[in-house]
Length: 293
Ligand code: GUN
Image 1 (spheres, rainbow, N blue to C red):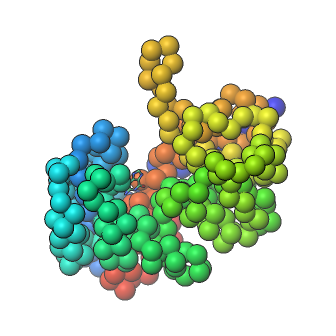
Image 2: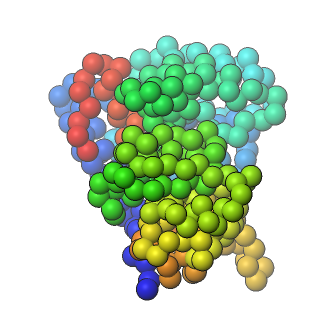
Image 3: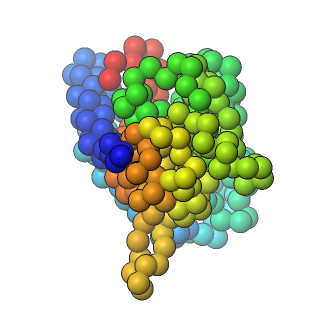
């Protein structure tokens, strides 16, 4: 058997187009242009690529993009002052501080200084709490993208056994919350889980977010399961750089019913969901109903 390939790139393009249409309507009807501020501290190469893509896709969606680049030596107080300025700025509806931050800056302190209603990453404790308690919240982008792809492929997720591998605040924990909200039976596995292969073998839906190249093998997968691979790992093959996921694609694709490739699976969904969150924030901050996308 060979798994169906879940085309996250195509799904993300469609979502970005729907966001762009809604932005056009918001401008025409309410004279409101959603604005996203992205703050990059330092010169981490992967972060620079993300920030450049975010800027480009924000403009393409018809939104305003405000980029703030600060040196790696920036003191924490200076970053907090910038966030405060963005919190006060009515043309900024979404604020994203790119992670990781340099060692002298307490990332949690910075994230929790963002107005929760402008926190388009959904990382603020208030948004994590709202998500965990089933209240309307800004939801982390990569987890939202995973669940959108799973629902697009499987339809209703009610009653499915979902195994999340990884317990990070950015992916593992929030994706587990979203799956609980979809009425899945959710297990969160991680690096200390005993008999991980046996745990994963129970899953109708596997979300791999561990950050270890090709760790999940085909022999771990229940035949027909849906595999969502969040990993983006750069490895050297024959002296050349290559991107691989947390799943061993070749063996998993032989057993799974459907699987996301790397690249072209979950990756493109993150920015598409970020744009959706920025639209959501712009509407909510102005008392306008969020359009259905
Ligand atoms: N670094 C890697 N992924 C992300 C993300 O989704 N948001 C932010 N702010 N930083 C990141």
